[in-house]
Image (cartoon, rainbow, N blue to C red; front, side):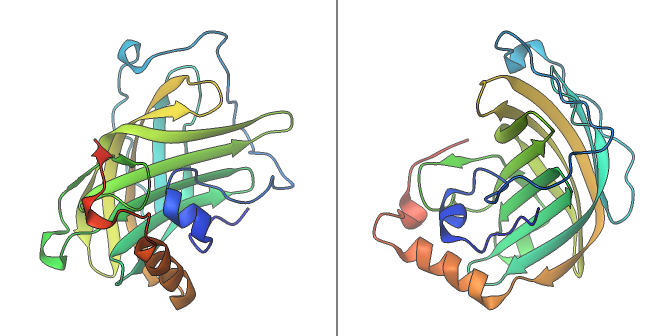
Length: 214
């Protein structure tokens, strides 16, 4: 499974992590459980931040889904529009953190999880998605609330997050806390950045004036 922002439909939504089909392998040692009844976030305590592991995204979860683990990560960015993605993936699992960046002098800050109906949120803002495939089920999670904190940004990016996730099919909610440390940043291919610019320039994209929910 390769998760990118190269598809305009994915770029405009910034909601679901994976825009491609099911990978051939399932997540090893990953037991994701589905509850029978809807579980709301107010009944779940946020887990503590895990210990950082350089080059990896490490996460702990709480709720009826088990999303704990550590995954090698990489980061990529566009200057125009100013976007950074942190991506962790392995066969059967993908997590994407997408940041709408403020000016470079202000990037060491908190990025609130923000949901928009179209276009992109006003910077600084974050969106997060997690997708898990298993032999009989797949699960897609979207960030509802919380924030991502960036505390290191140069050629590598470091940060942490504490967010509430919603499983899209069941509406069950879970908490996820994690860190990513020393993730190398590479430029996104120009065709991907151009696709994002074109989607944001569309008449219905709303630009910087669109309504958003934090």
